[in-house]
Image (tube, rainbow, N blue to C red; front, side):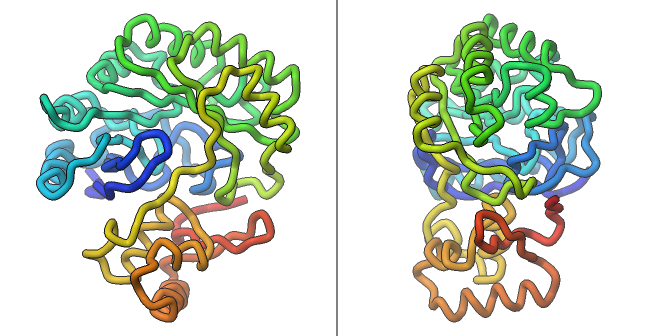
Length: 314
């Protein structure tokens, strides 16, 4: 088992307030290869559920973090797909305490077709699945799932979970200009949402570097139209990464790596996050990390974003 668990934050989230993040899987362990993924390409894709990192280690890290902070949520959010961890349900139950912070799980929802995964997520207070397409064609074009996954099974799993789950379902929809923001695609999405009956619908647009360079956000007019057709309660970009206090125990190079491992950023954005440190120190840390091969750059939207070296972009 790989020991790559990471508990980070609390970091500010538009949806979850101050969120203590729990990442239970290795970088880019996923069964989708989304065109908009800010962490780059999934290679290889996997459907294997395994205890990638010892569950006891993850829970111990979380409990230690909770001794020094009181977040609004404990959020299982992987740099990949967290439901691929075979003991996710056990971990949720261990960190969910009476009078303690509620637990959220950010997932692509692809494994909700499995009864055991649905059962594990029953212990969470909020589940945030993804729904970017209302048809098989766009599902394969946008999410590029593992070859053994299909849209009807994906949708059936979502419906079954809605019927079994007493908590909140907040659906995440990523809108991509010219792909799923036109009338037909939005109509299909609205039909799928009507079947799933989420408590909230959150619209997102690509603002971090997408895997595919042709990915663009929708026009403001199409975003307004999408909110009307989908009944969206929130329209948000990618969540913020945090404040200087989140990284105060880390050296500047380690803070930079911690940031870009989950949210690729430009140098100026990193300097804004680490506003309590001299800008020259942050710039030098980035240069040193480039030189040592720990970070690299990807060009998107006319800007240069820092990413971890293992990230693969088209």
